[in-house]
Image (cartoon, rainbow, N blue to C red; front, side, top):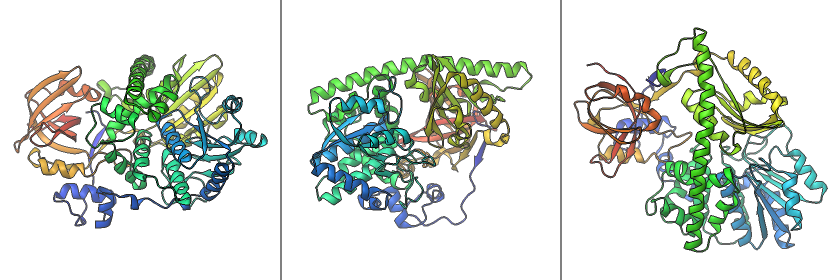
Length: 577
C-alpha cells in the first residue's frame, strides 16, 4: 500500500435526482455540491452566460478609465508579466485586446535566471531606454511589489496591478489593484488564476468600447493558463476551463494550432491532463531555461512554417528542462534518503519502499547551483512522493532562491509567513510559494520550520485515500465511462473520482514500456484492463499473475477498449482469497 489508509466516503442518504443514470456517479456529483438541475447543467455543460460580471472586481472601473485614457492619448502601455504559463497567457490575452482597441501595447517578461520573479525596476529601466512608457499593467504579479510601484509613480509612470496571489497587508499604491482576494473586493469568485483576472479585465474593456471580439477565442487562451497554474477547477474556473478546452479541438491561432497538431491532439476536445502534461510544460520550458518570449512568439506566429519552428524550439527546451530537472531531483532525493537513513539509525521504524513515513515533517533541501527553473518541479515531486511539505533551494554565492510545495492539509504560505523576516522576497498561494533569502539564513529557516512542524498532530501527515465509490468490474461499461467523463475537466478542487474494487484476480500482465505494466484483472463480475504507470511502480511486486488484490483506481478513457475506458491503478493491497 502507498497510502496509510483507505477511507470510503460517507454515502449520501438523500441523493438529488440529477439526470444521470448511474446512482454511484450521481452520488459523487452530488457530494461535489451539485444539488439542482440548473447546478448540474452549469457543471456538465457551462456556457458563456455563466461567467460573472467583471464590474464587481474592485478597481476595475478605475483600471479601464486609465487604460482608455492611454489609448486616447496614444501612450505606450507596457504589460509586465510572469514567465510561467499563467503569465504568458495573460500577456497574450491582454496585448491582443489592447491592440484591438487601438492601443500602443508592448510587453516585457523578466528573465527568470537574471531578474527573478516580480515587478523589477531594473527590467523597467531596460524598456525605458527604448520607449517612453506612461502606464504599466502587471499580469500574474505585482501584488507584493510595493517599492517598485512607488518608484514607478515617482518617475511619472502609472501602474495597474492585476494579480491573483495572496495579498499582503500593505498593497501597492497603484492606480488600480485588481485581485479578487484583496479585502473589500465583492467579486463572487475568489480563485481566478492570473489569466482569469486578465481575462475579466479584457471582457470589461471590450464591453465598454463596444468592440466585437469572440469571447470564445479568449477563453481558449485563458483555459490553458488556468489549468496549467493548477487553479481549482470549480465555479468560474471550471466554466473557463470547460469552454476553452472544448474550443481547443480546432484552434484558429496558427501557433496554438501547430503545437496541438505536433502533440497529436488536433481534432478532439482537450482534457486538463493534456494541458498539464503536454502543452503547459512546453510553454513553461521557455521561461524556465531561457526567455518566455519564445512562447509568446508562438501565439503571435502568422504562418505554419514559423509556428512549427517555434514548436520545435519549445520541444528542445522541454527536453533540456527534463534533463536538468532529473539531475536536481536526484540530488534532492539523495538528501532525503540521507535524512531517512539517519532516522533509521536512530531507531525510527521505516516501512517498505515508498510507504515509509519518516519522522521529518518538512523537507528544506538546498544545493549549490541548483537551476532556478526546476526548483518548483523538484519540490512538487518530493512533496508528492513523500507526502511532506518541501522547499527546494538553489544557492549561488550569498543568495538563495527557492520554491515550496505543500500537501493538502497544510497551508504552506501561512507557515512561511511566520518566518517572513528571513526572506528578502516571499509570496504565492496556500500550497505553492516562491522566495529568496540570504544563503546564510537557510539553516535557520530549516531549524525554525522543523520546530514549527514538529508541533503538528501526526494525523495531518497521514496519506489517506478518499474513495468515492466501491464498484464491481461488471459495472464499468461504456455508459458508466461516458457518465464519468461528464465530470471533466478534473484537477484541483474537482479531483478525478477514486474507485475501489475488491478481490480482483490478476490473470495476466504485460510490460509495454519501462516501468509501465498492463494488467488483466477479473473480480468474477467481469474483466478489465488496468495500467500501472511509473508513479506507482512500487506496487508491481504485489501485482503479479495469480495475486488477489483490492484495487484503488481512476478511470481513463480508452477508445480501443470495449468498455471505453481502462483502470489507472492508484494503490493496491492484498485481497481475501
